[in-house]
Length: 251
Image (cartoon, rainbow, N blue to C red; front, side):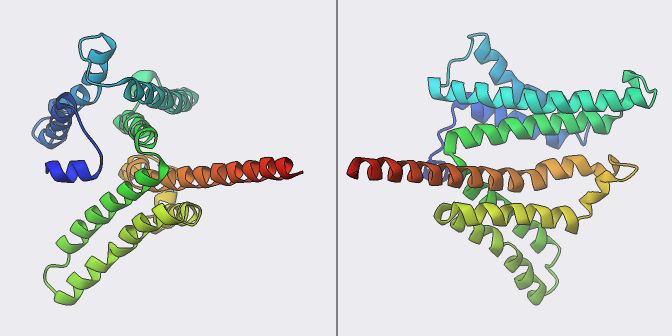
């Protein structure tokens, strides 16, 4: 386990590991009682609160700055979504006390997602973040696909092949970020259509947990694709600026 973490060049502190265990425990135990979900909240926000109070000093300056940027990004996106939800409910003459659970869950999912992705992009950069997200997607897709095809060898092989594109994209993202960014956005659009997530635009957008599925499943692919395209564009602009400076020096 230690060698795997070292290979990913990730060195989590003991408080981070403990917080991760608490978060997982909260999500697992919520099937026993909904109150256990509070554990997930404590694991997610507890370390940050302790750091801001000066009671926990396990991050260097770079990590603190990345965390602050990620928190601000999450504040902007989820704050806007919260206003949209409240405006929609008030327009339907519904009081704030009638806000459905799905809306609150969507806001929490988006808050966590934006903070998490922003933190990874600041810490690892677009290429490493995209590569590792795709590896995680490939493993998860492979496990779930195989679980549904254990009764047939052919189905088992076909299910295993489903994960190949994710691992291939993880490799390509390190070599050709522009191409990988375009393909990832295409993947996100495909899954959005394939799983009928476009029905979120219908009369019952909260049905079947569509917003949360879009955020946690389509979101990482889309965010990674956009980040890779931005990085590729910035790299092209820098190369063009260097050529202009070089040409000006020759003249």
